[in-house]
Length: 376
Image (cartoon, rainbow, N blue to C red):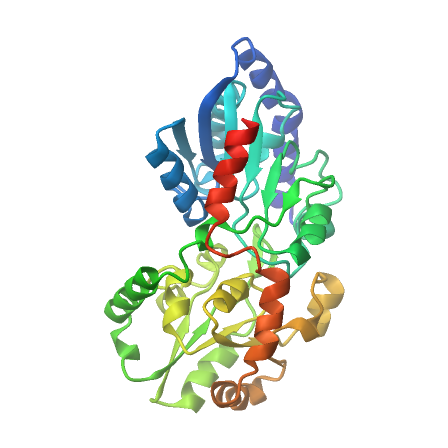
């Protein structure tokens, strides 16, 4: 059951989306659309999100378009700050040739947009794992009115098996969700990227030198307003059982930082920079598992609440598709880790990649730029 504060927040968002922001947009429509104007926008970061880096840098380097970047962490701004920033965006949105986002961004969906304006949703996570969006009540409550994924012209996903899940979760018609790849993952396999990650990792995690390394990167339960973490005690015990020859690194979701104020739970560098440097990746329901697959990392799932989660939240992929071993009993976790290190089925992982990550071939950004050239 959602608490009163969360419900009030959702209802205020609905009021903004249905009344205030459409009015600001209509006022902005007194001007013509500038087809050479591209706006990058995000409401979850104060700086450019990693998911936008490669595409933004590519478009800026081409010098074919005017680029405006608008990044504000709405969670830290309060309702008044969100209100004024959203109104400013709507004024800009009305004359923009293309808007690029990588997460939920409520202002984009506030009203029917002009046909000349295109919206590209990069989305921040590859693959299609746990149900989200309109397929999950945890994400969008039944009482929330209005389509938060409205106005998209392109949603980029990592593989053919992701098209149907994303279309369902975002209520998109055929042809909007396309397996063009994930822009931010284009450079993953490049040798310079891997060397850079290792150099940063060695500096930030000197205690891992000469040891077998594990990264635990769990998802959170509930929603962004009421996040929960499961499995922490078991991971603390795992560190003790494995001993000094192993180094266990934790990188929990940023939504959990305020609730779990332990420095050792926050990655010292971004999770995607830690992954190429470890031997084993442990997760539960996080889409980061797809990043680990690109790097061909051995992995296992530790999910004590697996049956409960699948029943309550639901998943798009079946559990037997998961590339590694699945552990639900914390007493068997250390044995599974050693087994994963010594014996890992890479053939199963390759089959998994073919279905969910085949479009991540290093050329996603090129395809997105081509889409912009043809459609904006």
